Length: 343
Image (cartoon, rainbow, N blue to C red; front, side, top):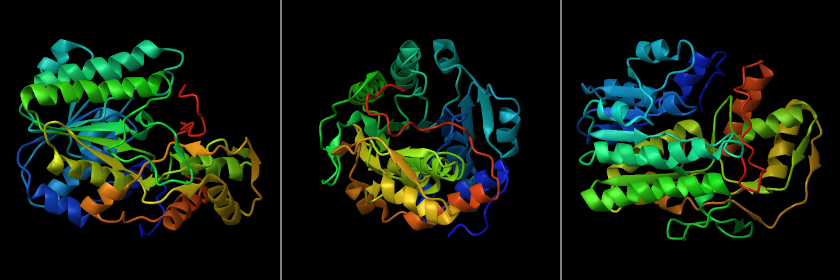
């Protein structure tokens, strides 16, 4: 359990970045500094802060660099206050990538999703071009690449979800660029012998953002919940970040792919009903139930890292309690119900 419900963004960051025993053990087996590329994104602070806190707790004198455009006011100073060495850079510029310091461990979080239907060219730059620049800059580093389960095809809701051995079959331009990101890193891993791991994530949730927040908000506002995507995989962001980081220990050439998600598929209808019970509201529904969804098997990650610490019931209670106390949300819908691949 995570204990008391946070009230501010800073308190949320502290909760989400608490390193677990598995992460601390892994850090003690690592060497070199860490670079979190894309540290200004939704999950970037959690990655960088968890690394920083873990290194301190493990008694290791290593640097954690955060690389981002840092476009939001105060974000760079906030990261520096956490002990993260913040570097402002547009990684789409080759000169900016060339100026980055040496880092033995690269966490690649750079990506573009929302708005790609209107400006697809941005997705191709962020998701395909930048990976090539980074892979060429760091041929001797270990690289974790954050990807998505959207590179898989829809799976029958009666099955166990896509496994790492299943061939990709993207739906929509966003998913194609995400597969492009993987292919570019795969090419340079094979060419240069760079050890890499690709973490295919779906879906990370925290107090302010995620599929669970989307459903909870609709129920609390008495808005209809779309059942077009009837089942989802969900995992608490703290667990997801810890597992993604630990994938670096399993990096290889060619890259090792690991699905990072919850160990069970979850009914959207049942989630809405759970939040309805929490808020004292009767959920309303819309959309026709589909027989397929983006679902991934977590069997490999479970074998590597064990079960996630945070179960589904706990996630519902944490988000419900946070919203009940008036906690600020990020107001960035995941669009999990969209089946066209257009985001």
